[in-house]
Image 1 (cartoon, rainbow, N blue to C red):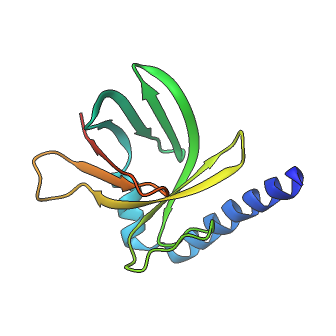
Image 2: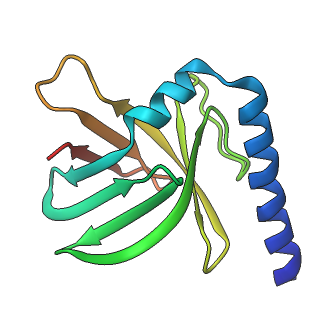
Length: 133
């Protein structure tokens, strides 16, 4: 069973990567550039989220690395979650448990604010807001 799940997860990322290369959606490509770098939670000044060029999402609390996930951005999520109004999805894969999750990006680099904002609604419905340091 575990090998089947691993195969499905790997197949998803290969398919998603191929699809992304084929479509080259300019909005997704722009978002992948905008999300790169360091973000600090607005409700936790020692909670830091970093998105890297090699598609890794790293989460730190008090300077200690808590987890590292693979991530991608797309309009749909293969874990079965869709947005009805075409909002961007943050898709993460926990390589240790092979758990795939999908969160909705509500705001990314809002031009109307003084600071860059990243707001995410988790799959559980919780809104988390980050700012650039």
